[in-house]
Image (tube, rainbow, N blue to C red):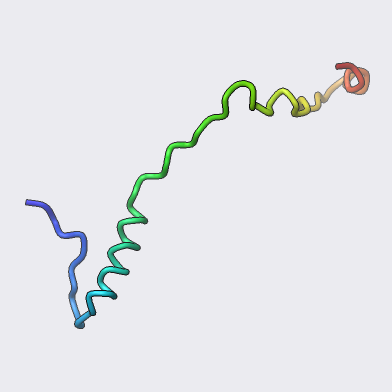
Length: 65
């Protein structure tokens, strides 16, 4: 037997109040949507700067591609 999603313990909510509460509860328990990945031609990763290197000689390599 399935457990109820909500149980009214006290008070007498209107059907509109109950519907609003049910919408909030169901949207909060819904799994997150899958993130869409961009196709290869729209990928902006090649345009991003590479991370800076630290250590000896780092100033020399900072000007080189």
